[in-house]
Amino acid sequence: MAQYGSAYSGLPPQLIAAVIGGEDASGDPNAVSSAGAIGPMQLMPGTAKDLGVDPRNPVQNVIGGARYLRQMLAQFGGNLALALWAYNQGPGAVQAAGGNFAKMPAVTRAYIQGIYQRLGVA
Image 1: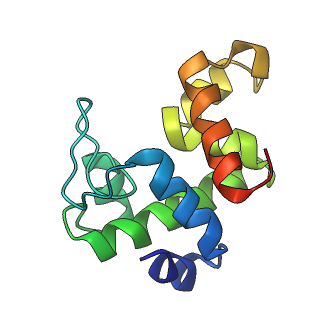
Image 2: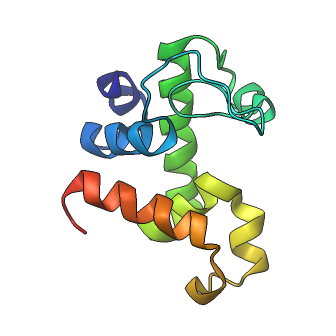
């Protein structure tokens, strides 16, 4: 499915696949988190609406998630760690912390490390 996201976002399919693995290791395209995030890339309903995708449609979910990640990369100057932090917690959390990695929650740090491991850069 990562190829769909790559085609619509220009991001490498390996990155999209790593985020999918970090978001929902079960691979269940119908997964819903306790926070209400949906699908392979765990889009929040409001984010999916803003992106114009149906989060319950696995292909649209991946396309939307990849576009959102691309937006976070653009917002945070191409810094992948900051973009992943924003993808995981929302850009407001990164901004509130001033982008200071020391203020990043441990759960988000583990999330990012997992993605880097999937990419083979950890």
